[in-house]
Amino acid sequence: MMLRSQLPEERFASRTVLCVGDDPSRLLLYRSLLELDGYSVLLAEAVEDGLELSKNKIIDCIVLDHARDGAVLARKIGRQKIASPLIFVLDGSELPVHI
Image 1 (cartoon, rainbow, N blue to C red):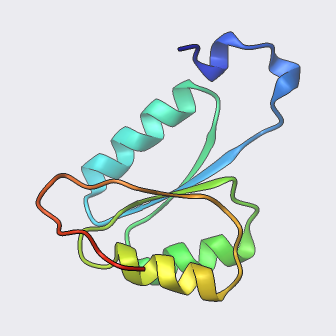
Image 2 (cartoon, rainbow, N blue to C red):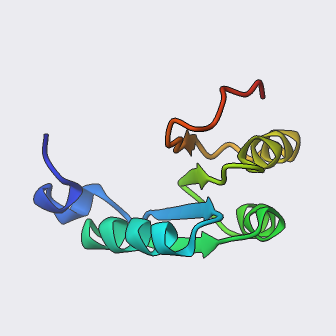
């Protein structure tokens, strides 16, 4: 698997990832890893902040690591017709949810 940073620069314009989570240390870890690979990263601890950012910025991908409210945010994003792909991060303690 090649990292984005190993591919020719012209293949990628600046890409923005929004990470929404309830654990500040994990959000900082996501930021560090994604920025190392050339992504621009926005962070939000509160679901409502994540929703506002997703409405007001061009977001290429949204990472949801919010144990309690990730599904709530996913539903709200869907209702807003925001087309960004969603990635759910689960640590195994959360039960599957229906969106």
